[in-house]
Amino acid sequence: MKETGIISQSLFYINTMTPDEITTLIATNLDREFDVPFKKQLYERVKYWRGTLIKQALDRAPNDAKFFRAVAYIPMAKVNTLECVPGMECFAAVSTVDLPRSLRVTDAGYYSYVGSIDGLSPFAYADAGTRRYLQSGKYSQNFTYYGITGLKIVVTNDALPLVRIEGIPDDIEDWAPYADCKGPNPNCDWWKTDIPMTSDIAQKIVQCILTVDYNRPDGKEDHQVQVDETKQ
Image (cartoon, rainbow, N blue to C red; front, side):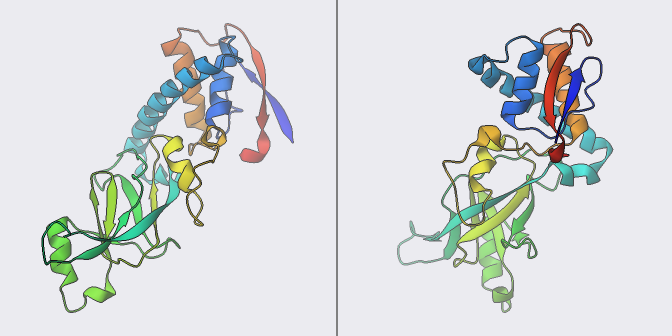
């Protein structure tokens, strides 16, 4: 079922949207809804305002972070992390792809969860030197540690094919290919993938772009847009 929302001084009918939907909505209010290159440019402003508004929202209510998170399943491969040192071996699982970028919204780090793919067994963070020490302990086989080197994740359990991460995406384009626990999908259509955000943040993004970036006062003209109620 679909309902028509009137875009004027109020944007209360906006729900969580894809990049295509939110840029089309903004472009419609600027009479450029069929200008695809323009909508691609608008998406850069959507990312900026979304990041800014989410950080402000979480400063006030940190527990709301769960409404903005996405999940990615990162493929891993067994690697000798000491291969440059002759005669020494230290195997670990290292991601075969660059980690998707996440907004840093707390002091805890970029990712709210790094662990098993069922989401029930988080790994403990440890830097490179500490990981080697922890791996040599008496009970090391009972724990899994991870670290991040550059854009790669390193996990002490070298047999893991996938690692699950959760975070607030900086750009859904980076996260969409890894949304399936069956493995990466490089051909996914990220332009039509839902952006994790609440309706009020979506509303504020549209308002900020129209009024701040394009100096369009609310209520100057009305456009009717179709909003899918099933995505509430």
